[in-house]
Length: 231
Image (tube, rainbow, N blue to C red; front, top):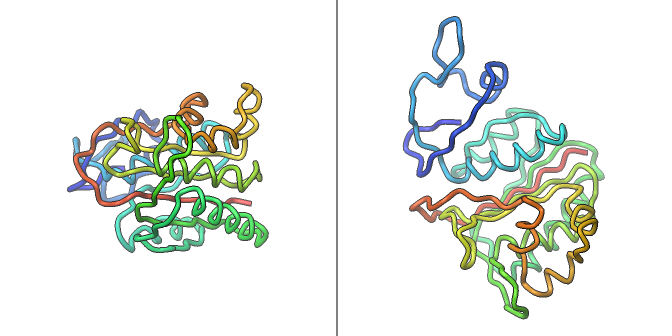
């Protein structure tokens, strides 16, 4: 999804039908075949992160397509365009990452009972109290705690990423979780709570192939978190 003035690049191979679904009309050229009106536009890193969540859901036939441009108050417009309620919790949330993740997980469970699509969005930089020896970062710590709190509830997905492309000491922006995340980990013989206790969020999501890797974005506007509830 191209926007002028973004901070990183993303290559996508799309058929024409998907391109038309994903791309606003003003970015499409006219003619017998679809394509971008302007090539080599740059992409906001938060859009890149949300694209990873979108791709993950699409690979499982689980969620609808929607645009992914997240900047300021415009964040709410993205889900609302597609009939998804947006709840913005603020862009300066702080506190212990795992505690905030658990809170947002419980909030997602409550919202799922309402029976309509909702996206919970927030920013801000949390902290991690290091207790273990794992490969961790505040975004994956938050996300693993949220995944544990939602406990595989159908219809709940989450993403948390650092917009500079680096979470903790790893060249990994963050990760995504899906309703089957915990089950897939346990099928591989891993205990999600044990990995959280060891501050091993990157190890957890990496072994599932659910890390979000953007590469260096050369910007750091905030951490970005979104929980998508589609009952």
